[in-house]
Image: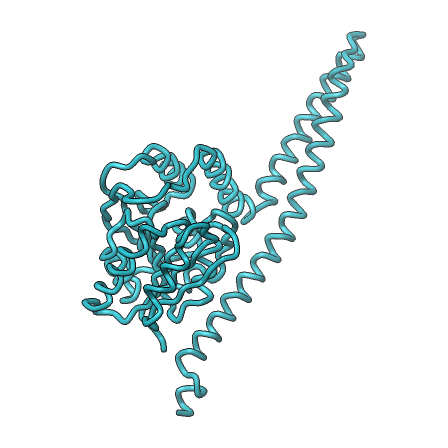
Length: 319
């Protein structure tokens, strides 16, 4: 059976939140204008999350539960959900009940209807991680000019917008950026954020520097690796040119009997560093070409799979 959208819910040690979550999902199912499914990924929980899920969803064909043998993170949980989904529209929704289940439908609607490729939620309300979230969002807008104010929230997106997007560990925070850079149409709606009712937040202080470094990694992937020769080649040529100027200065000083050996070392450093940077640009261009070919192959595979889903018995003209 094909569904209009799939709500993907990562859950790690959320035993006390699961009953209310499942109950709210069933209530939403009863009033929804869409035919949707739910994939709940138990991400290596050590409490009774898996047992509670199995008991509460055993009679619901539209709810799929999958368990990771150990904690693999939200990004991997989303990838597991993508593979298990029987739709082409996904909604990322956490199991901690800090967001309202009705927002799943509000996010999914514009994507299902084709208005946007990605719709992200703009968090409204007081929450302890607002300062950190503001840092991510401010850096995201500054580096990538994304047309939304909150990229680190619940979100809906279609398969087309992420088919060629590299989702590395913990890069789920940057789905909006990655999709936007691939040409996706981005929208945003307000969503209420409530205090956690039960369980512990998985957020730690170490997430701050890791998140910033990940954001710089995304910047490298999107900006630098798109035109590596422009970046590394320019740096290399400037370094070698500056090395030439310093070499000329060192030669003049030497002729005037004022030799200064550190200048010689500086010349060697600048010229050698510039040459290595230039060579790095050449290697980067080759890698960028391979990456582009991979992206084209993935998009072609997606188109073929999409046609097979639409016309399982062959071309439309043959039916």
